[in-house]
Length: 123
Image 1 (cartoon, rainbow, N blue to C red):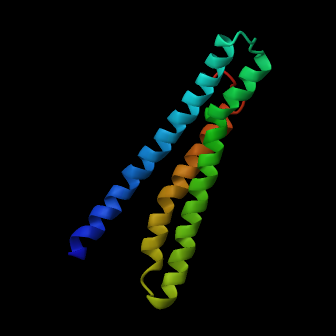
Image 2 (image 1 turned 120 degrees about the horizontal axis):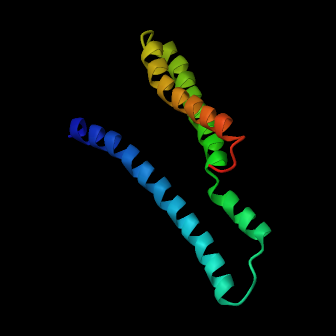
């Protein structure tokens, strides 16, 4: 029974996590837009400074930096886990470093996007 449940859970966790992040990002953007809409409907003037501050909520350049750092930390955690498991099983280090390389390279890619997009404010 667990031979079936473990792979199903393992392969369904990633799509669920991606969906949750996408959903909550959508909700954050929707809340920001509704706030501006309610302010305009109430007759208040919306200053450019307020729009600038609200745009920081959905700034893709800042999001790239955060994602890059988180992915690199996630990969480093896998690498440390591989070293810890290697004490028990001598053949565990290389596969765990291989698994750790995927989030590290994704993190490096996001940091590259952040670095190249940092000077371009029109993105």
